[in-house]
Image 1: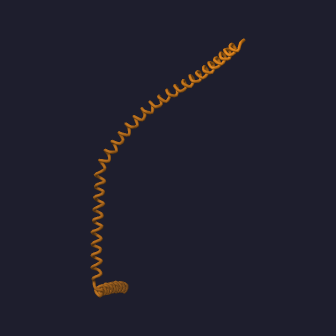
Image 2 (image 1 turned 30 degrees about the horizontal axis):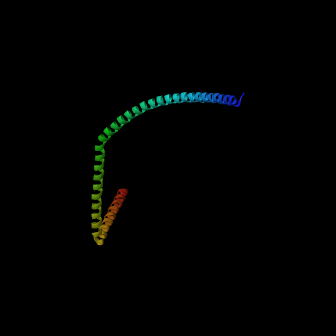
Image 3 (image 1 turned 45 degrees about the vertical axis):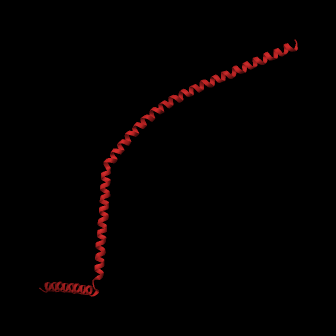
Length: 143
């Protein structure tokens, strides 16, 4: 065997090893592509299902939103009426506050002696009433 034949033999063996590794790599690549294809199919089915569910959910959300808007329009007058009642109550409170303030001002203007006279008259009236009741009781007990 000459060096040229030996080199040819080594090159042929190297080429066979290269072809074997290429076949193994292509086989693994084929398996990987099959698995990728299965995954893509599964994902496509899942996305289709999810898309359908999302569409249904959006339809239900739209229906719910329409219902809420309708009910909101129905309730708006009630809220406006409550706001008007609140304003009326506030107005009444202001008016009562003004009346009380005027009364306080007038009360402060009454002279002190008028109050004292009124208190004395009331106290004397109460004493006379109490004496009258006491006398009536004593008169009933003597009979």
